[in-house]
Image (cartoon, rainbow, N blue to C red; front, top):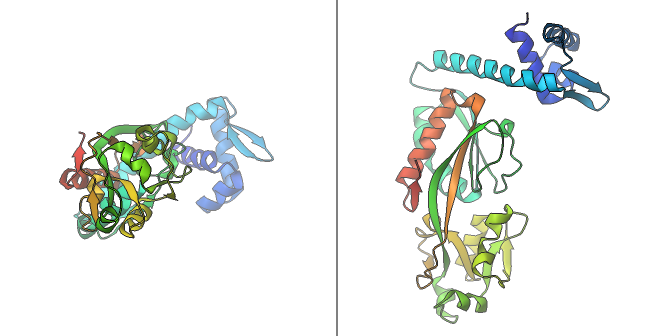
Length: 297
């Protein structure tokens, strides 16, 4: 037989890849960790790790046990939070990964309510536009532009939104008029550097304008907006962000329908945690109340 403590130590070694690192994180002696792993291996009658000079890696039996160990961990955490969150306020950390536009222009400005309701909750917002390589251990909740491919996460479409071309009033007044998409070839375009986005989203501009050359390139929406406000060119921007900017004007004669979606995902072993549920519900509330975003569920 083995215990929840055995599984806890097993999980730490699996995640850190080294016995000594796991022991250091848990603040116990490495021989104690080794003893628990040995007991587990005897109980399951299989080696759980391949020990090498480069670290400890899971065997097939270890990978199979990992699934059950994570379920036990999730149940313990959920029980703990249910008991501790009977009062009006939550505590702990919740880490949210979000695209830079969504994070900077919707999520961060909208944290006031959750901060007032749960002053002991620490919210970490990390903005990132490339999500293909995300693993469930990097976040408690993720909002992504692309549908995530990570395993062991729940994934749902969060919201639909549109994009349009925007420029400053002075830029448009001092440059040739834009009546069609093809007219954009005669203007300075503002877009992402090719390492800032996953390919399908980066390629959005070039699907509309196959021969375009963006003369101004940056890696975030804030840079787009500042460049457009400085009369430098025309930017393709999410409408829920740009429509509220009085310094920018949408090129309304370009009627091409440009639509994208945001996706929301949570690691399956964290779905039941109160702080994650509350943050997920808060994100959906922000989307539902935002002009230009359309809640997908």
